[in-house]
Image (cartoon, rainbow, N blue to C red; front, side, top):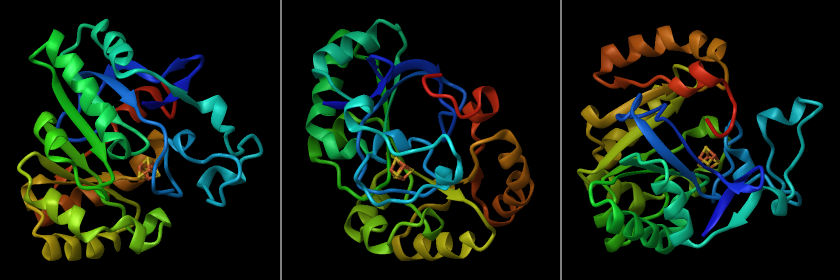
Length: 250
Ligand code: SF4
């Protein structure tokens, strides 16, 4: 499997889940390299914003920011070796994130099988942009999908970020939650349209403020909380940003 690289190691670390229905719970994160989207505000841009690609990013204006050399940010590892690293943390909750993990379903399914062989109670969350349909074996092995369909505020073409068959699959799955990154109040119109079109269950929709600093979140949180209250959605903060900022590996 191809993982993001943290120093000389694969990006596997023990932390608190910062987002979604499992927010606040201790978990081991494992970060897939590569993504099929290129969201302009992505905070895991080291998984896809490689040299030679044309995608813009919100950080382009920073003098210190540049595209990543693929060999410096991507590392290959055998699923069994990745499982051993995860098991060393002795934590029963694992979050497979990215990048887009569903681009490597066979490898992650092998990883889950290695984990459950040693620790049958391992709870598996998968963060996904909901553009790919999980294979039957992968869908069966995963406990919870944190599906995050991207809105126009991502800067990605609609044809790439909204895949009707995949979204319909997640809408029908009792394992799926829907987490939308909200940058402006107008995003709610788009979310409501998706909810109606695909029958997304309102009780499993979470709205999360866009932002890579606590100050960003504080600007958006008050009016977003009010939108959630008025529309019956769940508010979702970004705990890891408040605790550790935009740092990797925590
Ligand atoms: S789908 Fe997720 S990982 Fe991929 S570019 Fe968008 S925010 Fe980043």
